[in-house]
Length: 179
Image 1 (cartoon, rainbow, N blue to C red):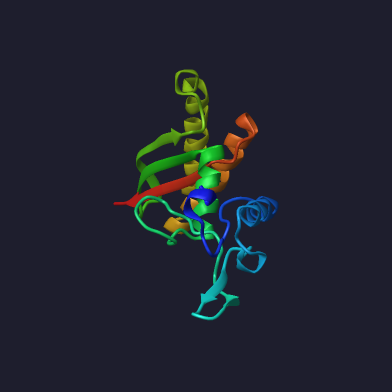
Image 2 (tube, rainbow, N blue to C red; image 1 turned 30 degrees about the vertical axis):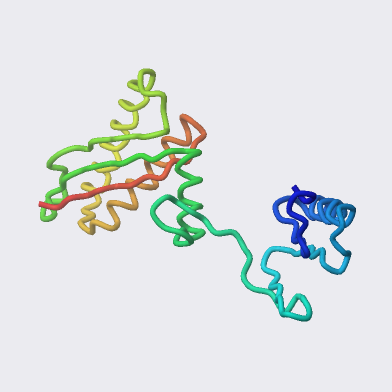
């Protein structure tokens, strides 16, 4: 390609540094002068004028995450959560409580994604539901009426129960609705 195009300047791109140098040497062997072969790193700024070419600075040249709907808008926290979800899954608990009497009106319903192989998980899910009933009963007996505290009891209790059975730490999302 270099023999066909016969460029005056050559900027090797794509590859490790040693590959860029090798590509630059190839350009020199095809007639590009050594001064016109520019080996750059990500972020280097190269300025071309009528009389000379030189590196004039550096700009941001880091990684840009593309998630399909936007460019660069995915932060470290989102990536960390996605990695956690991909490794350990998520468990959601939905329960309705009577705020005045601190008792369970409906539920708990337990939904898991990426934690268990579903056909073989019925026994474990049954045990976890029983554990959730005990946790909620404990909150009722203690007279805990604060939704945030109930959620934290659910989160901690379910996380311990799942870890004891599977050695996984899924993200636990409790949804407590008051009536």
